[in-house]
Length: 398
Image 1: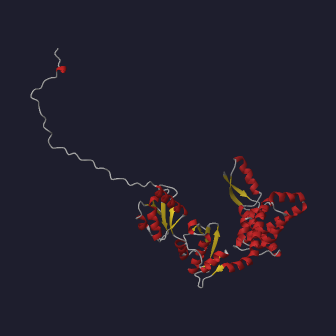
Image 2 (image 1 turned 180 degrees about the vertical axis):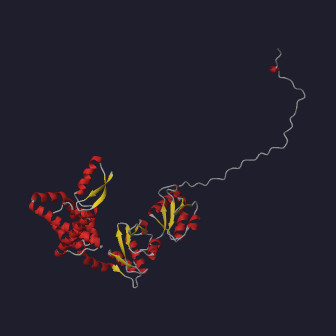
């Protein structure tokens, strides 16, 4: 690279750094001398852009285009892009009208019809009034194939918006019918309660600590990032009753609720639902204590000390487990503290009762006691013969 002083055609002289092979640098400098200096080129480009923007603004005004929103520079640039899109729309439509084969090809490959293009053409300029949108999508208006892709997206978007707009009056009327208001609501934000299979879901977009406490502490619901939810197990009653309970508790706490299900709505409004039972005896189906009873209760109840008094009981969070052989004591405990037995736990009771009844009943005699022999402290005195001789058969005379 090297620095060259160049006398430009505009009459200015300036120094430029030229790159490339040495034998070509002078040739490049001579070519640059035939044009404008950097400052004049910059001014010329600015003037050309200004003229282009003024022309685009004039055309937009003549066509009755809506005004764009944004900064002054954004709007000036976006108007040019928008007018460019007008010409691209007209070119695409003209090509489709003049060439039937081309029209069929575009429709087959993209799924976009001539009617779709006209549909978007009639709406895009009224709907897209943010200058930033035209700037972000400016590359889509450079090629017809790119623009067809954008048209497909806008077609689906606009039709969905129109569908929702048409349904809005109906939805508003329905929402009025299915919305329950307490006399003095804490907030105008509505808690929408839905039954989805075996789950209760509650949508409440406002963040409130009093609402959160009801969800967690009273209804055992969890936040999934978009709504509160709880899958209702079989022992907790029906999902409709749990949804009705949620609605009734929220209404009582001063929150507006919306419930589409008529049965659930009536139960929530009147408070006529089966309360959830929160003390249970289950059957352990896995782990170290498989086949044992599992005593469970919902906080803030606390039956730990009472349950641990059951013979053979152990603590295995969140249960107190009890061996099946102790079913009689367990049944007494369940009756005393209003604990319900699940179907599986009832099966354990029946099996343990049957095993007890079928066990062989025996009445053994007490074991016989052995007579104790007490040794004297001194050994008996043996008589010693006066003459001791060796037996004749045992003699060895040799």
